[in-house]
Length: 402
Image (cartoon, rainbow, N blue to C red; front, side, top):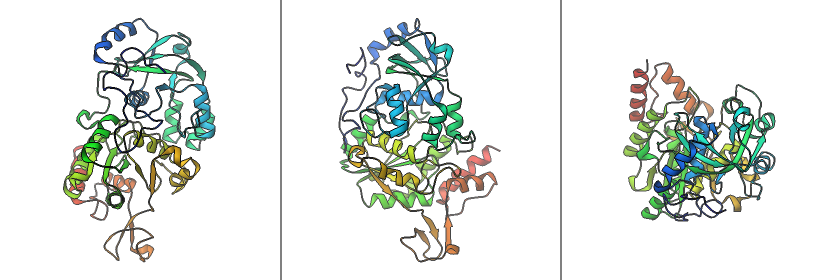
């Protein structure tokens, strides 16, 4: 597809730097160049508009900087249905979660395929222009069952998509938003920037770690096991929309900076944020997160216990097993599958079933949920849960919210 005017010049031509080629072969760039932005903003003032919530703005941003390559815009019905039913794009490339643009009946009734529409961010600023190729109805029940394995409205992912409009609008986008969507502009590296950083460091293999929680001892154990296999680690916390009881992103970032500074080799770790919304889609989101990290230049991806899970909707290792259902050669990024790690009282260190003979009574299991529960009760997480300096940050933050 030929790029619309101004697209691609902001960060240069799509590149393939880094240890691994972007998903689909090249890194998409839909960010409008500075010298073309004013004209498109003026045009947007006379176009029909769709108001987009923060989670859709996050998808729009990820499309535009290439994190969702090869997507150049929001999915059409063929890709939407192919992802739901076969977990591939319509061209056969593995893809697990639909990336769609919702609209209300009123909004969708104001334009038709072949027209241009302005996408307006929650703050009222024009975020993008979309060249509409198709307008179609979503299938809420089927989407819920296929992506989240449930239609239960108590599931946060299902609840989130139920709030969206009933029509989906497809087409390539031109990104115009002038504001940082992450809240951490200095730490929000684009895929092109992380790839350049990996090249500069000389890393030929890089493992990514996805998290929406502070790094506790089990996370540290997995990351350092992975670092024994590869040359670099990308700690890539998600800082978009999460559940209301998840620890806020600013507190988590202070925790990440603290533990990385004190307990990790500085020349083998890069911290950067991912301004995506959590879906809590468990297995399907694990595939989705792996694809995103390939676009950021990673060759490996850590998949631990109940990745992107919530409640009891998914099995403990479903997010690992789903990788056996996709074409590994096409996916192109290697999942590192780790068993549930725990603090072993007998050995006095982190372990798993593979590395200790201890009994169940000698094992302290860790989780972000347990840490949050302890903090909410005013209890300091012990050293078996997290490093003391991280506990200091968390306790201070929770005292300040009382």
